[in-house]
Image (cartoon, rainbow, N blue to C red):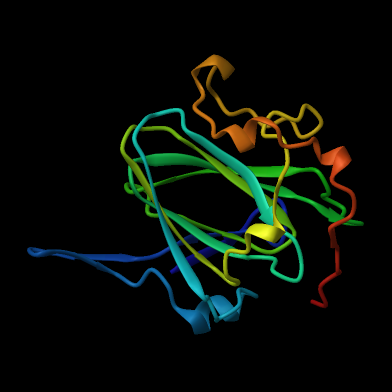
Length: 190
């Protein structure tokens, strides 16, 4: 399993190893001790499986507030997505910045998104399936979002806005400037 820190330090790109033989392949997609050594909590409490019919489905940018904040370990098992995490921790040196990575069934990469980040993705193919583990249960009363098209964040989704398919709730999320301090940055001791 290869693990790479991204330009926002707490985000990790994880590439599980695939072992092939005449039957197909085997891949250890999650290993608690290896990920815990890199700061990923070993305990996930829920796993979500999302299917999107069309190319251009945008889901996000979502987060859950404390005390039900979620970390997410995201992978795409069918098709491809542009996966995005935005730092929303007040006091963070990377506050308001984002990382975007392609996750696909072909490249087999995963993204660790810790609490304190808004998360979303865009399907790059039709018939995409995304599976992600979370560190706390879904809590509708703590569910929030920020605008996917906030110009201060400046995410290049790579497609014309008119081609996007969004849920109604994602059309009305506020810009990052209106969410107030929800999470606070804590410097790591390393």
